[in-house]
Amino acid sequence: MNVAGRSGCYSRAEVDPDAGSPWLVLLYQLPPKPAYLRVKVWRRLQALGAIPLKNSAYALPNTDACREDFEWLLREIHKDGGDASLCEARLVDGLSDDEVRAAFRRVREEDYRTLAREIRELARTHLGTRRPSAAKPSGRGRPPTCNAAYG
Image 1 (cartoon, helix red, strand yellow):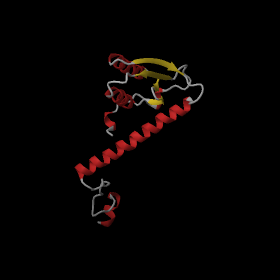
Image 2 (image 1 turned 90 degrees about the vertical axis):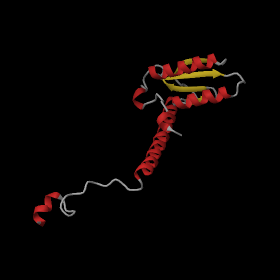
Image 3 (image 1 turned 90 degrees about the horizontal axis):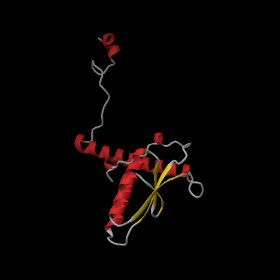
Image 4 (image 1 turned 120 degrees about the vertical axis):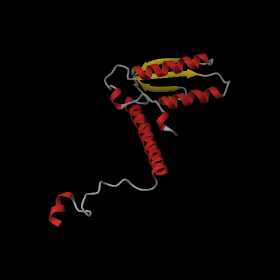
């Protein structure tokens, strides 16, 4: 997975737990054909970082950036013959707001682990297996403050 290409509009700082409706929920239904449409929508939801609540219900934090992303996807679904609605929501039963926040954190942590692994692999490929070393002190490996004493 190439995490660098994922736009995802979620950040812990953006979600206000005291907001009236902390979530945007996209509800959609796709026609049975063409089959590729399900994959297309699923990939776009993944790229946005949306969390599945149910089969065709996905959540993002209620921010301007996320609203714009979901509105764009909603128009794409309509254009391709599907049906979709965008709602503002606060979860009151079943999944809690805290559980959805935790799901976002898990996904982001997984993304960061993947990104860190990709960076390490890239560094090994382009820099070899050497590890970055600390700056070497001057004077035959002695700390600089000790050079005068060792002469």
